[in-house]
Image 1 (cartoon, helix red, strand yellow):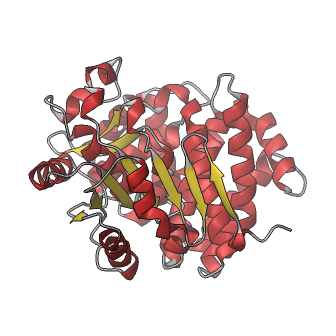
Image 2: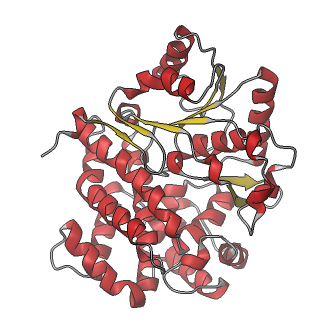
Length: 389
């Protein structure tokens, strides 16, 4: 078996990825390759005082690359967070962005880079119709992405999820050139992630693989990437949760997270349709929401995905390959990780059920759900997940 803890590789799909333990030391070189001389490192408050951020700043400065710092980002980043970051970027005269952290930091940083040279407001670039064509591509700052969680895969994504405070809705901001120019995927940066967050982000990665695999449409590349990522998650997620210092587990999960985000270019589904408004309204962790919603959405979609789940179960090595085998595995993971069985366990209630169903129906993830859904079907899934039915 390959010892992934010692593996180093250079990948160029979907963007150049410097993968392997210790490769954070190449940060200054990656910045220089993208013609940066004065980058702004954007991270979140939970990371800003940790040694790996301080060391990254020190190494860049030692390499003659003055690097600024911005960390005023909420766990579910807001438009105001992006505006504040853009103000710091412009006032400091920076020429590139280092997106450093989990999904929140990466999404906010990519949005700051997008907005660095724009004249229109952020919401003009919501992923609706051809809004992306309104972007001035010359105004987008280059980005080096450094993921520190194995979950969202935002490091290989062309979009950011940002809360619009006025509507309390999560908006997807999109442009093809939001894809970071270089990714440094160093599993050592994920070692300190607590077990609970390792589980929640890992389940998020799983949702990013399951939903595109189940989505309708012909995209065998996405399907293949999703299935192999699920196999890696089946083999390594529980190991990473039990022993966060296991570099082989951390390496495989970091790879699987990037694969999931690559695969979901095919589309997502009702897990994300509901998780987006719930995250905006209740400020709950996105990965945890997906983890709770997962079995309810799978069961709802069962009539059209049963054969796919049978093939998946066989590929990842489940006994008695079937839809039930996959569902049982998901439920076992949630039980092992202490993830609540219902949304009520995350503090969600039924006070805004109709509003949430309508927001979910309007979410860009909805059209690619395995079964066609509208607000009525999404309300049914939501209530099932709320009560545990």
